[in-house]
Amino acid sequence: MKLTNDNEEVREMETAEHEEISSSSPSPSPSPCSLVIDEFPVKRSIVVGYALTSKKIKSFLQPKLEGLARNKGIIFVAIDQNRPLSEQGPFDIVLHKQIGKEWRRILEEYRLGHPDVTVLDPPDAILHLRNRQSMLQCVADMNLSDSYGRVGVPKQLVIKRDASSIPEAVNEAGLRLPLVAKPLVADGSAKSHELSLAYDQNSLLKLEPPLVLQEFVNHGGVLFKVYIVGEAIRVVRRFSLPDVSRRELSKSAGVFRFPRVSCAAASADDADLDPNIAELPPRPLLERLAKELRRGLGLRLFNLDIIREHGTRDRFYVIDINYFPGYGKMPEYEHVFTDFLLSIMQSQCKKRALADQY
Ligand SMILES: Nc1ncnc2c1ncn2[C@@H]1O[C@H](COP(=O)(O)OP(=O)(O)OP(=O)(O)O)[C@@H](O)[C@H]1O
Ligand SMILES: O=P(O)(O)O[C@H]1[C@H](OP(=O)(O)O)[C@@H](OP(=O)(O)O)[C@@H](O)[C@@H](O)[C@@H]1OP(=O)(O)O
Ligand SMILES: [Mg+2]
Ligand SMILES: [Mg+2]
Image (cartoon, helix red, strand yellow):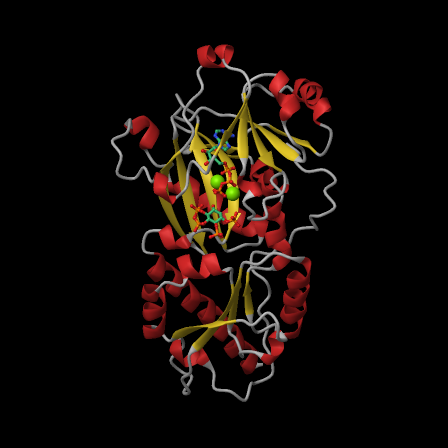
């Protein structure tokens, strides 16, 4: 299925699983490699520069994370976005979640000039998740189906402008009501999270493009958030929108705006739920999905929302993918994240050691 068409804002995505971490000329400062590779004699900390929103700093850079990181030889240093990046650090890893063209340009330039620094993640790849149409293209193209289940995306349609054309476009595309209307751009603004459910044809005229219209899939009111940190995967259950029965649909009309129904406060991990609804998606299926998405999106830090079609055991739909999500709510995130940073240093050091041999 082709979900994307001509969105000018989204550039070609990077297909490499990792950005290249090539060797650099030996640096005068001591190498942090001794922390992860024994043969290196000089010790220094692994320096992680971060450019995050204040909200993200509060939820992610918690004292427990910083403490555990320090014990593992990792320190976090705030990046001053008003000063040239190359005058700061030196960094081994750069973590960021910021929007804006200028910041992307600065980071791209920095990556080119500092191939020995790992930038998590490449700005161009992140851009792919800022549009709800291109966000799910990778899942649609994957067409994942094996003995553990099938993973797809709900049928969807993009409306760029002119709400009056929506009913006809919906008919032509064969989309079935009710429809979830999502702002096309997912840039982290409050507005980009303002979703609504449209029950009938007439109410479609009230929607405000640009948006993505997605078929609502009944899923028993529970969704699974799959957090990915490099190779690591953690899954939590959250409450979601309740099912819409045929009867309810025939009686309902209008546009129902709904708030962030699956936020952290909506944890369903301890709820007493129907096991057919609550059962987590099979681990091997999620591992395959995560691996392919890491490769296809060129990202290592993201989460995805996945639902199981109610009444089925193995029919899944990915409805949302978020870059650098709220890891503070992921079980064991401090351990998972610090181990991930160490593993990145390990591969940097191995590459450097190999390059030094030649
Ligand atoms: N196609 C769908 N079928 C059923 N429910 C859906 C569908 N799409 C979205 N939802 C419901 O709406 C909620 C919000 O949708 P979505 O995750 O796309 O928005 P978001 O603002 O990007 O969320 P996040 O806070 O995770 O970034 C979901 O958590 C789920 O409860
Ligand atoms: O606010 P929280 O900590 O819950 O994290 C949310 C995060 O907000 P933040 O990046 O500003 O922190 C969101 O990013 P934007 O789309 O708004 O950019 C998005 O990724 C949500 O899916 C995250 O919630 P989660 O999926 O993990 O429950
Ligand atoms: Mg979501
Ligand atoms: Mg989202």
